[in-house]
Length: 379
Image 1 (tube, rainbow, N blue to C red):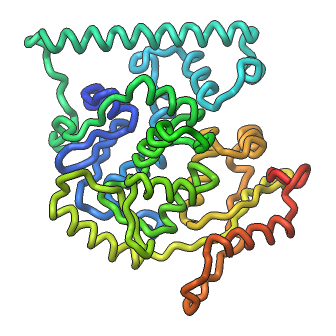
Image 2 (image 1 turned 135 degrees about the vertical axis):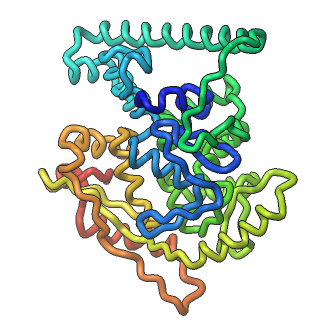
Image 3 (image 1 turned 180 degrees about the horizontal axis):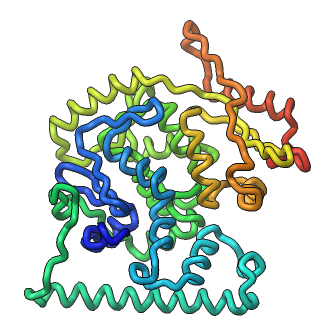
């Protein structure tokens, strides 16, 4: 929130600040810098076409790292946090233990870190009370000045589709099963049905309501969330959160009741566009150039590899040993490389992509042996 965009960011609701953008009738506006993505426009990025809803998320990821990173990078005048509190919050966000943080930052003792946690929780409680008090005040005080919106063309206005606040139970479930935040990976999906529904509705936020996806694109998104992405995809279809064509050629978020004909027509257009965008599956490696260790895995969409780099920079990668050395050596010490692309025969309509991809991955694991001192994979 630079000085130029302070008023603009402050005018956003809590949910809008958390997700990083404001939605108006005509555009999505980045809370961090005021960048706008106009609705109805297709934006190209790395040879892939995106609807504006998804593109504003990509903008936030590439320009600001994440909303969390951007917020804690602001000075005390904006956040109310001291330098040490901002550094500690970054460590907490990575899921580090008190002893590990104390050693890394060289601050007092582990009891000092615990005391800082207590102080931050107190600030959180105080902030909630202040927010409640101010909302009650605004509901009664008609003389309260309205903060101006400093959008580029003064077109921002108020968001038309604000998300409802989560219940205490939903927050508890999401905190438990997304230990690195809802932008990170899922701990487990082996949970009771009521909790599964909460989890799947949260995962649905990663999909653009105005976009039609190929199965490979859906797999690419879900693979970054949970290793059994097929189970996730099937469950979201079974629960009616995702809809799909009978042949599985395209997927989309199930529209709410009363969807307009315009939206239906738009979906048909996007289906055709999705068919024209080719995705490739294959095996990749994340190689430590300093010590030669490597992590080998497969993905149904090689264009989603930047998601691996993003998770590692956020400290939320599923492979903890790889994550620790990424932190130790730094991003520039690693290379993310495609090992082999999966060859899909055009003439064989019964070709099992998932099975072939697993076999291709297994063959490279056998060849490279990225275990123990040689790599980060679990034997």
